[in-house]
Every structure is written in structure tokens, then in C-alpha cells.
Length: 248
Image (cartoon, rainbow, N blue to C red; front, side):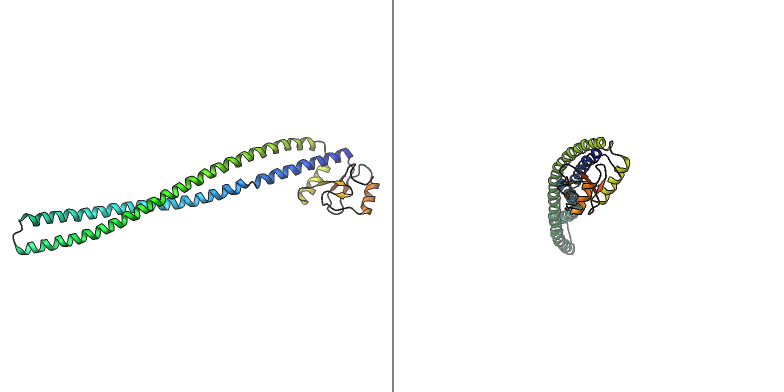
């Protein structure tokens, strides 16, 4: 393929812009804030699950506490009625009086047992409630951090996208002056060689693979026509001659 030397130099400009676009894309993918935001979001999701479980436990314990309080209240009222009857003198027989006394004693024991249960449930309920409050506060802190990181990330995205837009416009301008056959070869080589399809020959070295060309290869290049499209023998990239190529 023969290509005007000016077009070959234009290809180097296009390669520079493409490399810049690749760098910007890589920078956008690997912003540190992305990993931080992902980690924070995962931690928040885990906390959300714990908060839901904690809130469910609080609700269950609230119901258990209400039941325990009602149980204590029922026994207390019954004991008060029996005590009032016992102290009223309205119980006639000794047998009834004895039975009533036993019942009052039994109710007192039952009330003590139920109050222990009530106290235990109250303590568990309070612990669960405080745990949910702590988890909620931790989540709020993480959400604040996530919001800050997201703002920083989005600002960086905006800056990068602005640079990409400018570079893309420059690429479109440069690409219009490159023949379709040459552009197709360049794109194929870019895809096969890590984004570098064309490289400058600088002081006898290919700047694509960084290999120094042999004297034989340099002689071949020296003898080639100015519009001959050259390829590096090592990496097969398009090799573009400049005044600094070192083959004069």
C-alpha cells in the first residue's frame, strides 16, 4: 500500500488521539471512587438486612412485652380481689378461708414469676431497640460517605466525559483525511496490538514495540519510496517515518 507521507503523519496524530481516548476510558473505569462507592453500597445493603431483622425482633419483643404486662396485670387484679375478700371477713368457713389463703400465696408466686418474665422481655426489647438505633446511625453515616464519594465520582465522570468529547471531535476531524483501506488496516492492528496500530520510527527504534531495528531493516526502510507504507518486522504495526527516524 502506498500512502502520501502527510497522510501517514496524520495517522500518527490519530493514534495519539486514540491512545488518549483509551486512557480516558481506562481512567473512567478505574476511578478509586467507583470501588469505594461499591464497597459502601454493599455495606449499606448488609446493614439494611440487619436493620430489617432487628426491627422485626423489636416488634416481636414489643408484642411479647405487652403480653407479659397483661399477664402480670391479670394475676395482680385477681390477687387484689382475693386479698380484699380475705380481709373483708366475709369468708365464713375455716375451709374456705384456708383455700383462699393458699390461692393468694399461689397468685403471689405466680405474679413474681410473671414479673421476672416481663423484666427479661423488657430488657431484651430495650437491647434490640438500641441495637436497631445503632445500626440505623451507622447506616446514616455510611450513606453520607456514599453521597460524598458519589459526588466526587460524578464530578470526575463529568470531567473525563468532557475530555472524551473534545478528543472524539478531534478524532473525527483527523479520520476524515485517512483513506478507508488504511483506516481499516489501522483499526485491525489496534485491535490486535493493545490499542496501538501505528507507531513512529524514532532514531531507528519502533515506538510501538520499543524494539531497535536491525541494520538490514533500516536499510530497507532507507531505500523505500517516501509514500511506501511500512510495517515493523517485530510487532507488525504501521511504522511511520519522521525527520527523527534516523534513516537519512
